[in-house]
Amino acid sequence: MHKDIATPIRTQEILKKYGFSFKKSLGQNFLIDPNILRNIVGHADLTKESAAIEVGPGIGALTEHLARQAGKVMSFEIDQRLLPVLEDTLSPYDNVTIVPSDVLKADVKTLLETELAGYKDIMVVANLPYYVTTPILMKLLNDQLPLRGFVVMMQKEVADRISAKPGTKAYGSLSIAVQYYCTAEVAMIVPKTVFMPQPNVDSAVLKLIRHDQPPVTVKDEKFFFEVTRASFAQRRKTLLNNLQSQLPEGKAKKAQILEALESVNIEPSRRGETLSIAEFGALADALLPYFG
Figure 1 (cartoon, rainbow, N blue to C red):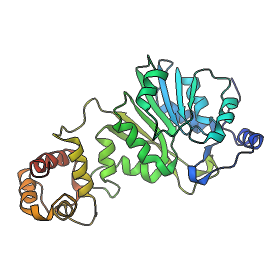
Figure 2: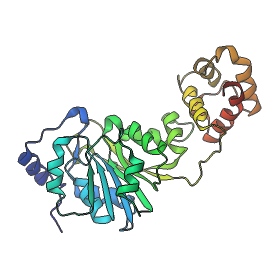
Figure 3: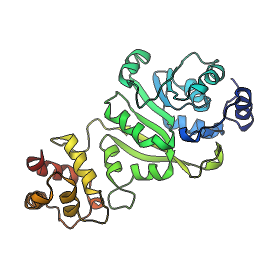
């Protein structure tokens, strides 16, 4: 068994060897606790029949633990300065492919077909860069990739918002956007002390498992998401006010909005955060004839 990358001493050695300095703009915070890494990978339930996709491997701390558990690891790294470091730290593992590009610009679907061909069980497991957590998650969900799910570390506040239930303060359009595709639960809280450098916020590991079918069937997915975003545009406003101000020509269509709300038994005076995904689905379908 090779010496873990993720210890404070080994991390310092590697950074010193390569004269590496952290880039704040890339949200680089490296994990320096092997137990936390083992726990994260444990939540992904990987076997040698599984493949893992990682975003932002850093110096390979998590990548190494994934390589030990999974059959194949494909990791996206945007910071070209880290490529020689990863080549060195991951040299003991022959089942890792580093893709030297921005995952947001990459054609992930094609890469899955070429790099992870033959793997039916694919999980995204990553310590996501905090400044682009939501765009990365949404891209990987919207790209219709054949994933079982995600075990991803992010800012605790974002994890709370994604996993929030209706009627809570954290619940919003992001909760619905993700929960439409996956079940969402916070698997563990990660203190800032296990990172180098330490971030200013606490982190959490979020476990997302894809639904076989979305929890609600809608006539037009794009419009469904448009309605949910509109309903949360200003949290203090009522559903009626938000829909009027956010939907195209909403002000002129007040009567139609009221009619749609009434047809699905939703009070116009309710606020977005009180509606379940099922209610949003029914509302979007009722509004579609007037705005589709």
